[in-house]
Length: 295
Ligand SMILES: C[S@@+](CC[C@H](N)C(=O)[O-])C[C@H]1O[C@@H](n2cnc3c(N)ncnc32)[C@H](O)[C@@H]1O
Image (cartoon, rainbow, N blue to C red; front, side, top):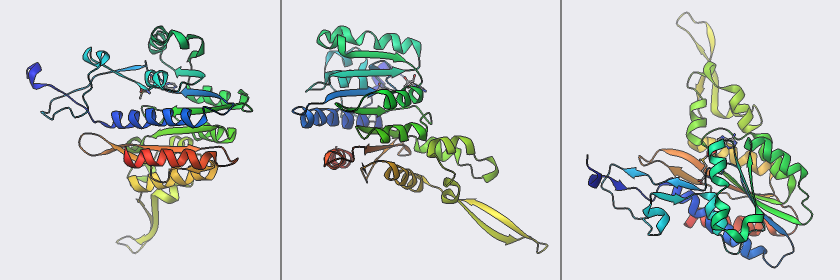
């Protein structure tokens, strides 16, 4: 295959996810700009600020091709860079990343944004550990935040989500790993990854949701318990939505399913708002729902 046969691939689930995030950040800052809050953006799985341009073997035209310089050089903007470009701006940017090389790249983002240099913190940490500490120790009296949770797979623990909900000051976007969780729910119930699923859902109730137990007779007429998997992508989504509703003030009821190029669901993008005072959560969810359902 020649280079000419390689086409830039656009319109992927990554683009959808980032387009929704970028629009939300701008709406959020516009809505809060006259209020006396310090607005903080927290990117808990920040990457480098850029992502490598993906190439596809297909001849599909690149519907989402953009023309700015970064992209012609083979890089597209990642969430941290998009957050820095948001107008109106945030007062603080916290970029968390566990990989040392990526942390070093994140450290360079301030060079393109000299006006924001003093507002950017780059932290090398596990996202769960950082977020729990941040949610507990940040004073929320005069501060509000948007947290973006964008893991590769099943890194995010339920205890972290609960810590975010308790602040009553954070709006959160969660990229939930549908396909990875579906794989943890093995067909053979004896091989299920119980501890990982317990960490993700924060309860053992998932077992009754995703497995059906019934008694059957074997050929000798002996009764035995048969356990079959009943969990599918829709049930996984519904269960996580129910878990979020249990701890957040308000949750977007139609999270966006993000599929790979073959149409298989990879992730579900959820939004939840934690502020139980006044109408803040309602407004936030209205904006997020509009983006999830229309963008
Ligand atoms: C999907 S990528 C993030 C992409 C980024 N949000 C963007 O738009 O460019 C996930 C990132 O999380 C980092 N990571 C993986 N496990 C982590 C953890 N436990 N805590 C913090 N970062 C982690 C990976 O090194 C990777 O850079």
